[in-house]
Image 1 (cartoon, one colour):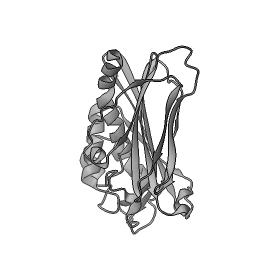
Image 2 (cartoon, rainbow, N blue to C red):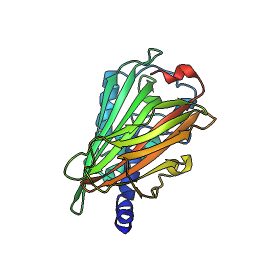
Image 3 (cartoon, helix red, strand yellow):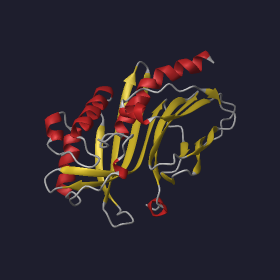
Image 4 (cartoon, rainbow, N blue to C red):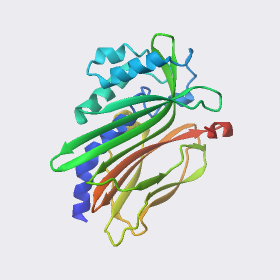
Length: 266
């Protein structure tokens, strides 16, 4: 299917940018998740700190962003700045929004980070939405640590947002078998669709490499795969590409891998 292969190459670089978006505050890189590191000392950032960080992310001054961050568990300011700059180059109108969210099972306040952006490439408009759920730590002046609880990004093209469900868990136990399913929510009605699914290596994510996804025709309305989690705590990151006559969808989803059943709870 040469046309489908061409489409895969056309969105490859934009799939990479969706990875960059979801890594906006993951300074340690996905290969060494902050989740398995010791929690950073300090308390939750104040509302004023969150507002200052949001303003810096939405600004154009890298120094202003660096001023909000300090090296700590899960925070590497230099790496965050590079990913932030790379995303701004690909999506000049990217907007970050930080919103306080419900406390986790231990009573720690959480923060939802959302990135939205659009990009016109030729005659095609791409729309990006990326979400993270984080626990942030502060020394009272700067953000000096974070724990990533949930992460997902979706990049779409076409005149309408095709409804798709990413049925991929946020967290699994070490060695557990689980399903990675991506489904078109509406009937295909005879449309020719194709898709590909790939587990990214920690090295690919850390190096911000653009993955090459092989596409195959889909007959069941989605991608369905049963996989096994690693036997060591950490994470798995999945990249998805779907091609439909009405548009292209690429997505990334991070699955946390934990050894303690108590960590399966939000």
